[in-house]
Length: 226
Image (tube, helix red, strand yellow):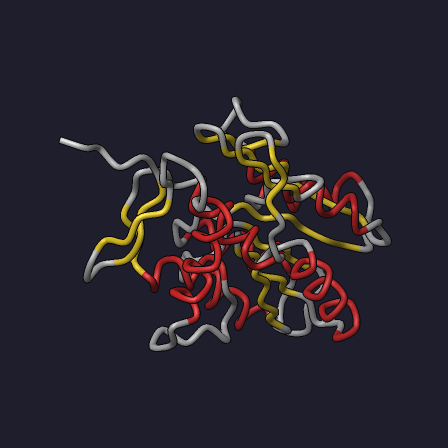
């Protein structure tokens, strides 16, 4: 899952980016409202964490502009202003949730997870497919009841694949969601991680879940045998 943090405080932005990456998110940072709006309008993010007080314009205006541009990405607004009217203004502008500074990072994570779950009432803390299960809170993967040791990036990659079962995904589509702005489409990093993931979740199991679609990309699911 990919998150955009629009925050002008360098220390706060760096801390949020570091924490999000440690929990498996691909995280980018924009320091101004204009830059943040341009990045968010690209439609590659799952959640935008938007500070209310920005140097060039306030977060309410950024939020309102994104909604006017038909950007449906979930928006979590951050602010040191905690009055009811401030919250109402943010929500009326199109924000999906509101968090007042200072806050605990665990609460931010919980709110981001809640936003990602919206519209998916059947999903709680786990994602399942066949005998493969991901616990999104403890970040533990199991196949056939046995724990599979995954790195943060492997876990993020598997989560993205499991959220898109039986769908053919190109390397660019995968890279845009699992990696941040440093992702280079011409590199083989996606192939390397897919290969590593395949060894960990498919080796020793009768049903393979990761499949290469020649010339296109990859597909997660059960291969139909005619």
